[in-house]
Image 1 (cartoon, helix red, strand yellow):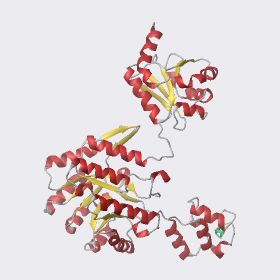
Image 2 (cartoon, protein in one colour):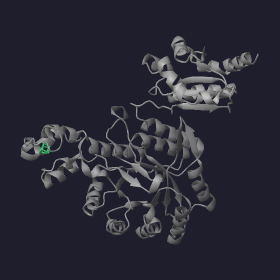
Image 3 (cartoon, protein in one colour):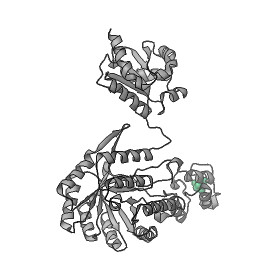
Image 4 (cartoon, helix red, strand yellow):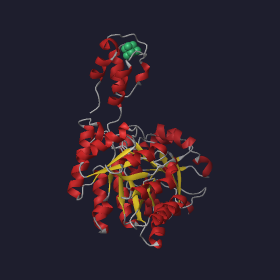
Length: 455
Ligand code: SF4
């Protein structure tokens, strides 16, 4: 629960009555309201008491701290969530999917898992879906073997790492090998917390706390915070699915609804430790995407189970307030040339992929002009005035399509046949052709059209 502007104003100079305007706003009240909504920073008021400033900084920080694992462009950032339910606003940072590799797995399995992390990529509605991390587990009982695995993987694969070892010395030795990659260390418990603090104060890395219950995590979090360590993950040792979902929900609710800072951190979930069954592991992972893990560690990896998981993650973490849309441009389909037909549609991703796939299956080389229309479908965009003759004409002129084709024939969706007249006026050198009403008519329509042009 974020602090309200009406509570902030009482803490401002002279109880919020100084109203000196030096912050650029007419009153302290206006400053407080803008501060609460994130529209201005505390430093703009030079008169806030330092102790109050610290208090306000704490109150204004995100209820769930954003935490990064790894470095560079491949780093994963999770946390910073603001709502319990996606429909309240949006979820912000999708959970990272980590493939677990144990040091007692055969060479071939290790090789295959690392290869799959880099090779299993799926194109989906204009995005590339893939897993994000590798989690390296010490289970052989041979520290040298674990170190060799960490050395090999960290040297050959460019991705964020999680190091998993109940043996703290093995964990810290592995950390020393790849500390520059800022790997996530797990588990940090009451028994090893001092050693871990000493290590990550020297070479900072995020730490995942493990305790039997959510309540037991709280003193561990406070201990790390007192040591100045804020890159924290929570990993309650929940055991079964029911307890895990209860714990995830408890943590999320405590952070968002009670503003309980010690639980305001992202979590790690381990479907890999909850079942040996491949299908069940994926179902558990799917549950943790919804409720509310920051990192999900799985051990079975194949494209048939990974793709549904990644699509679910995309769907849950897509902002429901913003339609998925395509870039406004001309898309070549089936290797078109200067004589190929030119079609136009709107930039709603679903519209684009349906129309593009029907053109593909027609096997007719074509140019598909996709016009920015606020991510709306054809009819809705027309009704909103975003797919009219007046707006299409400038797009066609600037799209460069006139340099790419040797004809001037533009096929518009049949559902907006009524814009033909205005488009003809706006593009007098173009012949405007009314195409099919439904995309599934394209595979029969386009070959016939091209045949008629040739004859
Ligand atoms: S600078 Fe500070 S004291 Fe002055 S009006 Fe703004 S908030 Fe109030």
